[in-house]
Image 1 (cartoon, rainbow, N blue to C red):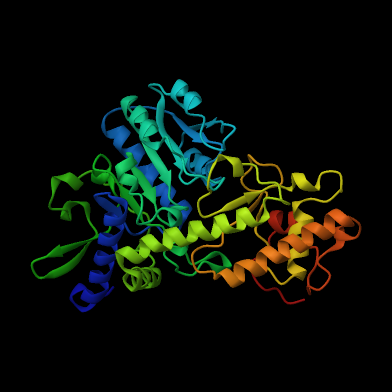
Image 2 (cartoon, helix red, strand yellow):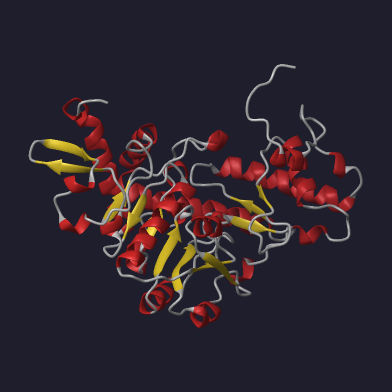
Length: 392
């Protein structure tokens, strides 16, 4: 729709961002077009399916740890695979022995989240990836928690074959209101030939957007599974993400990860004496501090009541009831951008609410009291959403 010679700046920006993502992950190829995290998952799994089909391998099973993101099994099922869960161990990590015991000629891939949804780093990733590869499968890593390790750990060095990167999380592009998102996918050398179109290529005369399979010059890219979207991806998110990267620089991005992890551990250490912290004794968390509502046992109150009460304290509630491996989960993700002063405000509010609930459990089922909308029918909202305005 637009002559490519007139958009050289935009194409160069996409190529520059792609180069940053490849360097940060240690992966040789990237697809920029996926428009969100789950869309990126689908892209990665379609590439895995294409690679297996290219070698005539009809594997039908994808293994998904309990500590992985909830979209992972949905993505695998959407691609036609049977999904089998791998349990978490008592330390909140993947049960490696259970995973290794299940590997076999029918396993196409393992979809693993690292750091996982318990806010913990998976220390056995190199062993897991090597074992999956030895069994003939691929490893997909959910990169939604890349914020905790960017600049410090390159997923490619761990043996990952494909991973999406949520630009709207790790690289500060807007995440409010459900989007817009952007989920580029990086690929290992084994999957690079199957990456989707289009892609930007630097030429002697500038940059070009390659949109046809036959236009690929290198035979290394002859097996693309096709396209994910009609155009090149979320251009506005590309601009914001690259601006964020270049404003920090390589050293600054490493500091981003360190600050995100520091902030989460500050919250964890400040609240674990009153909130139940199921994995606090297993070492530092990553960029998310995980609590449960076990400390409220006997009061008749739950995570939902506490989250609603936080609204009256002026705070948007944390992620509730996720991950599923922890009962009544409360997942707090401060990121690198919060100051110590704002963290102290949150910690103070969470302590205040918890102490009052334990001292007097009555009347909390009706909170929040100060919000214009208090207790909505969330089940009806999920099952019968109204997504556009309708006049009364």
